Image (cartoon, one colour):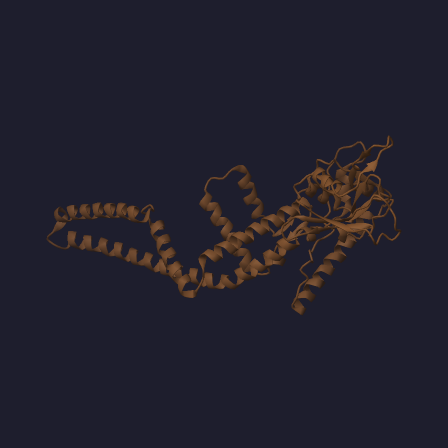
Length: 405
């Protein structure tokens, strides 16, 4: 065993498996017992270094003293892409052709999945980036520029061999940031002082990083889809009930106006009698509105009365139909949180994420969007960061692409 593994877990930790040894006593290395480590993406590489060092024997320095071996973490140098693409005049056209072919392949795979009634849960539906814009923005040696990333990782088609130039990373770097940058190649290297060779570890792709998140989102989406029709029908009936109450109130006010007109101009009572009557009725309405406020803790207004009527009718319909509103709110809240986290990872990897492939149903997407709008209305004033997150959450179309500078 000469290579390690970096796996994504349901707890969002990384499981790193390394064949550790500082002496090569067997050419096939079958007797090397792998070591498994759990690390968090926000922990620094220095923490991972200390975990590995605690499992290694000491080595002797040149002066004969024993000490802990030093460990370095290396990833593929982004400048190798510049060197590889500098002498290729047809890189742009080849990349565009590859994009068209891969897009066609994705559509064919999607149609095949729908025809067969299943879908590969690890399929990320990613489109490879063209290198033309990245090479133009990055700049050459001695020049500043814009860095680009890749979400393919171990799924990349390019080969990483012994001659591929690697760059050593600072140990204060967070593990998640290191993995994201290393995803432009298939592997990163763990170099242990005194070991016969460095250990190559496969880099997880965007699909690997978000696999469990996407599986949870699909599960939540199925539950939401099963309840969405019931909730939509209950909401429609409650809205109709509220409209009927509103029309009834309009009829009462119109009838009262007609009665006042008749008694004032068509009878002997006249305005001398009807004026104090209308005044007392208006005063009674004011007192009734204040009593409404005391009982319902809501402002006495037409909109408030309409909302209260619809809300009470909704609750009765939900109970009659067996819809647990708390369960619904939990599912929608959890699905929106998962969606936001996946989008965050997609932006870090500078890739695209089509949320419709995981939610599968337009009514689920609409339910999540409606919940986000409702939260926005309930929060009222928001900080600048919250406003930016809301704008990112409502961006159209529903394909997410990381920013390029």
